[in-house]
Image (cartoon, rainbow, N blue to C red; front, side):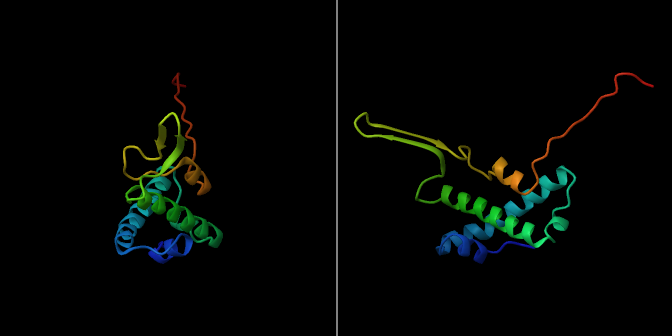
Length: 128
């Protein structure tokens, strides 16, 4: 299963030609990143996508990530996770969601997809 630009348009809004080009670049990047994350924790994302409900959730999450990336690179300004505005004190503060740029996948999105797992490891102290 692969997410397409029309999935993004349906869930968000009509896109400009430049945004469509960005979406066509970001969608495969996000999907590849999610496959790598799943592989790292020992899950087969392709098998998980056979479930229709999971596939819909996956599509929604990929669209949210791509939307955030398009917004971050648009003239509307980068996406912020926190924003403060003061009038008389001339203060304007903001915390960027992805300050360094690049692909950013939130932990909540990974958790929603079941890809946020803790690892536990043990070390044998004695040789039995």
